[in-house]
Image 1 (spheres, rainbow, N blue to C red):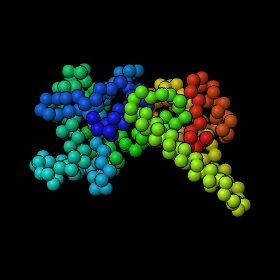
Image 2 (cartoon, rainbow, N blue to C red):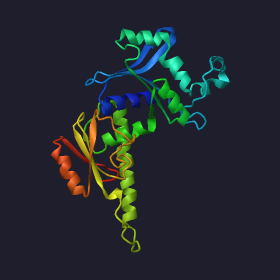
Image 3 (cartoon, helix red, strand yellow):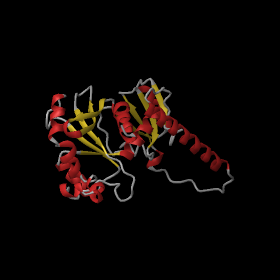
Image 4 (cartoon, one colour):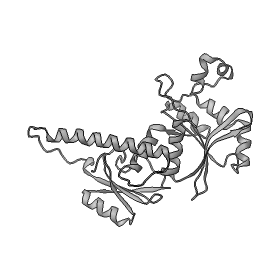
Length: 268
């Protein structure tokens, strides 16, 4: 199992709260990266992970998938970055569909997701028409970070524990840099006009029993829209906006969640 697949599985389990099974072997040397089930709604998902940070192959494209080019080594990398490749070789492959049916995944009754490092606009349209949902790996990392920050929970999962250590180390380094800037002598500056960034929000997560206070301008908040500009409502909700951090914290306390946090990036 590749590292990126482990990170996606950790996200699905810890942030989404879904049960997962990784690396399912199928006939014909095919393999399913990950399947997941939401224990609340019983919704089912087939998830494929394909991450490339190479500049030329980073984004998923809408270029035509060509079976002949797929056989040519020089074209294989670009063909694997097409929506058509995932539709034909990952989701609609008969051996894959049959294997999923044996697990109770009836065709047309489960979600199909590709996790990638961004995509072209046309690729998003083609994916939607093919019944494929696209997740951005960068958003997944940010959402994991937002869920982990401020948590005192011990993670038995190696991937989450590694990410937790990295996040804490990064936050500590950022705080040291901020302290150096704050302690430097500075000239008097005019008071900025009040903006949306001065508003506060609370993210309440009922799946993992926590509530986190954010500034509206925080990249994890985006004025109550979150990292993906929307929230499914399955695991939590945004509360706000509030005119002051005191009001927001009072709201966080009123949720009754056992773990109350302040975002280490924007509200510490």
